[in-house]
Image (cartoon, rainbow, N blue to C red; front, top):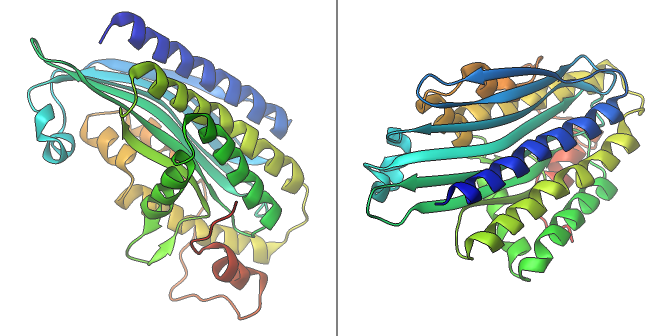
Length: 302
């Protein structure tokens, strides 16, 4: 893998982090991201940006990382034995936004690139990422708009890309121990190298660029919606599902911790406040039950 190709990916990711932070801070209107640059002892580093206690965003993190090493952690080589004995580089932007208002959904996005190399052999590389939405109170307009933007980002690369990545997202962001979706999905893809490098990179860029285009209009529509203690408690309860998924299933979290990543940055995806209530169920016919009945199901939104 040429240094030029790696630098092009890194430059894009750093610029994406800048653009997303600028737009999120502008929509919040009262707070700015603070930056924390860090280095990894085994190789590489990154810059973490966190916004807390804004008018709209209770806690949001937008992280860039570029880590490398002489060998991969066991979680990677167990699934991909052909990577054993190879050095690796992994770089990406990962973000999670936890709004204060329960009517504004939580959102997550990630775009990343991975390459493993060995003297005398072709490099093994792929792109991955996507974005997904986790509402607490569902609005058809928001979810349809989210998926329309996701579909538009995929369309230049083939009519089959959006359906594939949409269904992959539904399957991936599913809490098996709860048998329920984390949210209303979006896009998810991994191990993408079916195209040549330039086309694969272009697809990753299209999806990375589409995130803020999809999310900011939802923030703007819902951020001033009135809410009370009931809505806030339900939001904190549903955040528990987010925590469960990230700590039990999320590939990025597992890879980051096993590869000796910076724990503070890896776990910035967790919300500042959360609650678990034993064996709680929403009242039939309530706005809370509507989330389960109409939104936390597999649907074709567009």
